[in-house]
Image (cartoon, rainbow, N blue to C red; front, side):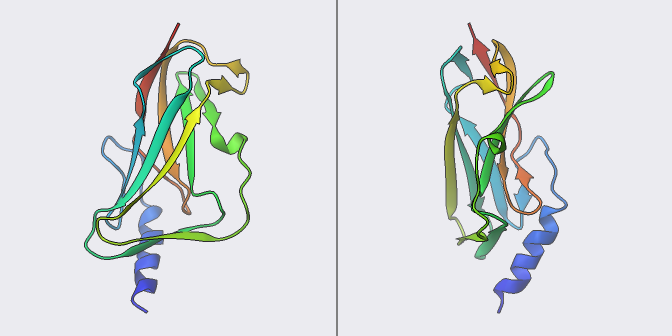
Length: 148
């Protein structure tokens, strides 16, 4: 019975989160994006890991409105150039993740440098990971470069 107020508190605090220079936090949870490199050659995949961790001292639950729990997107000066949602189909099943104090869950993937208009061009980019709770919680942006 104690879990219901915590879930409601998570939902309320999720709506107050926004992207900042520090890791977003939800009722003791942190969301962090790590890239496998800060610079990749043109055409080489960029690996990523999105980690959600319970940094609090009580167990918590994160609720998701579909089978997709994480998303990855890439932006440059002209706006969004890639979003996993463009190519990922999600089940309609409600899902959740329970994390005890100190526990974490990782979501991994890669970007093959494709955009909605073709291959990504060399230059500077920023990547973000999203935890697809309702509303989504984004990691801080991580910059990287595509070199020739």
